[in-house]
Length: 195
Image 1 (cartoon, rainbow, N blue to C red):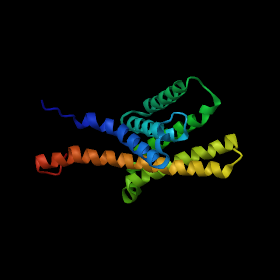
Image 2: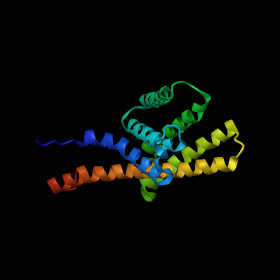
Image 3: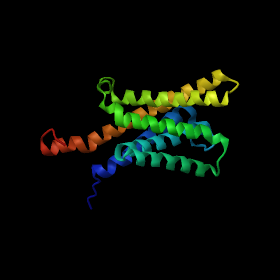
Image 4: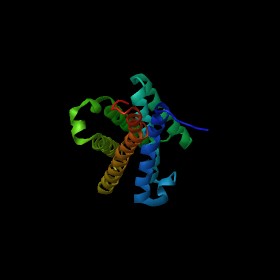
């Protein structure tokens, strides 16, 4: 029996799966299996990869009010997964809001700017996610005023760069897979340049 998944089915799945898997790989290469421990900081590679994949898909397919609803739903799921609300969740809620803003910025605005085409979508998206994560760290610094500021910034810089690059590569891999699975085959079958 021949089974064929349409692009309409596969592209949303890859939008979530690719950044998640690449972020997990970045976490594994840097922190080893800690990336799979729920209470360890490297677990952020799993949660952020998954959440940003969902947020980008929502930004691509939904109107703004629905996108806000998805963001709120992700925050509720995050709180429910921990069992109850606690002040320790504030950084995660702030991170989710910044990442939602970065996803919206990348999908709705930056794709229309010519500079994105010059430096590449992968690099642009990576930079935006890095800056969003760093800005989230700065806001937490102002709110919580940790004693060891240098260690704190080193932590956020390292995570921001690794997660931002992981997300950028993940979305690039998704685009490459769609190109190979659907666009190139379509050109070959039709003998033309149209999809």
